[in-house]
Length: 365
Image 1 (tube, rainbow, N blue to C red):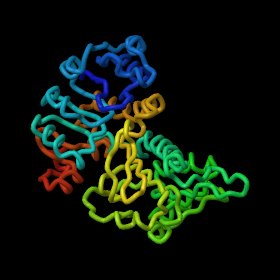
Image 2: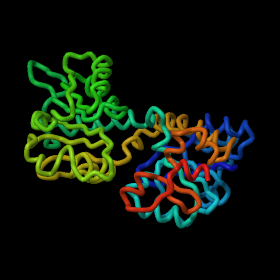
Image 3: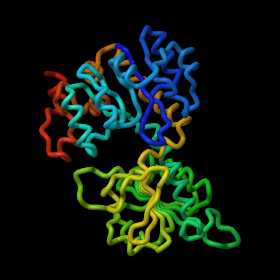
Image 4: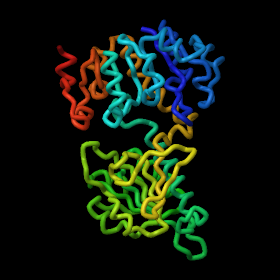
């Protein structure tokens, strides 16, 4: 099996799927690895470093896709990449299939195997914490007066009140957000549906300016905050919201919403994905920050974590074949989107109204 690592083409996306450390482990084991030229440049890695790790540097994406069987990426496939896909390809990347029906059409039409890396992490993607940290940082910045925010400082200088923030969802993304907010002295209330998660979070962050509450309490509290950081991954099939358009009128006019999860029409009804070159917009006067590839802004750290998390699955697929690797690891199986023209991904089938074959049944057929 030949591994291909193309350069990401999504705007302002600098991550790379495997760093030289992992490439060297693969090549030392006799695996051929093709890396597109400059694929790692924004992650601080040169072609020479990939060569030293044993990779072959390819001049363009077509050469990588044309020569490799296992394609390992960071982001979903864009239309420009569809013609490069083949039936014998195994695709391993963050696919987000439920939200991208056009991409699913292309994958099924090719009859290839596609595995959504975002579903394969036992303890959550290592990029989740980075997204929380950067998303909280950006939210703080937009609280400053020149951006129309409350004008409060993150410290309570001279007896003034600091920024008051809500973090919705205390998983890996939320914990990343807390790390930044609390280190800067911001008053934070963390909301979660799980009493156990709230208890553990309170033990981990025993700050006088931090408390937690059940998510059911957020509706009554939302008007108190200068900054609301959404870290809840909202199920695509739900049509209700934690913050509706009507709720925006209940917020402070200077409030900022940093929607790190960025599910359009999800937990925040008025969320729509933005890019770094134009990261914010206003709805009902409320500033929204909804960049959909936040970790791409810190590719050096993000690629280091992402490549380590993916390596164990890549190694297993090479040693066992993709199907047997899925049988051996329930998390990898959970990410199986399609194979042989058959959809297996449950959320995608439910959201898009498609027929599917259950993953376990497909793997054992």
